[in-house]
Image 1 (spheres, helix red, strand yellow):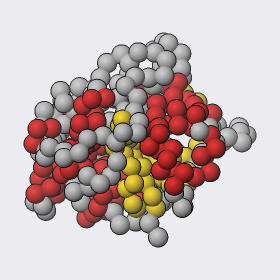
Image 2: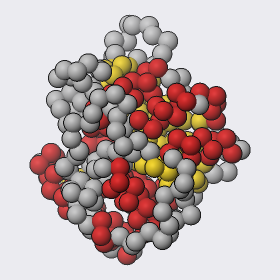
Image 3: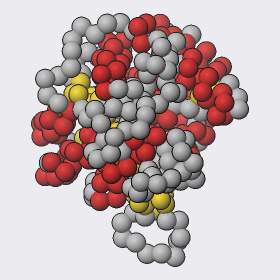
Length: 308
């Protein structure tokens, strides 16, 4: 029996690969996509999501438009790693969507999909956690309908947008804290410590592009993102952060997770948005969060390649 899946996203190059992996995986049924501000504006993330679903032949999946800003403080700036349009300037190479966003906003769409589901739903938030925080705050009675959250975000050993904070958590720390610290929904957090280690090479991308026209189009969205990660990694490749989280949703246990007490820094200082992980094994804390720390790196890359 397939697992119903909702992806909350801010496409984003790695989000594009994540959506493609979900569509290509028979273990899950993509029942909804919701959009959030993040890598680019909400208008652009929504347009990108609609066009990506058109490319993937899944325009039947409803797209709910979500938050355009964080819960409390303004968003300082948008990501430059993904280019001006979120897809390295190549969003125009995707097919035009033949249908627009769902009439229901993101939270309403998720609420109705959860209410209608006949089995637990996995939600994969791969952008700022604003929509998820609003869903859980407004409709706490739906928490038993959520089988698991698989969240891409945070860094145990530092960040990428600041020295201590990863982009998704930094974009809305208050929302991140509500979801990761204050709520009691089963959650696996896939941090950038692991997703960077899962980075794929230019040769991997070339192999993928040769498999189909759809894959060639996906790889065609990567130039700006690749250029950024050449600097970050020191070699010709890129991290597919969000696709790693979707891989865990598709095949639970493909990532190896350990439970730790966590917090999110919501102060308005240099550590804003940082994930605080208490790794003191002698400390007893009943509230822990499963953090994915390891995987078979080559096996994961091959799994994604084979699926796509």
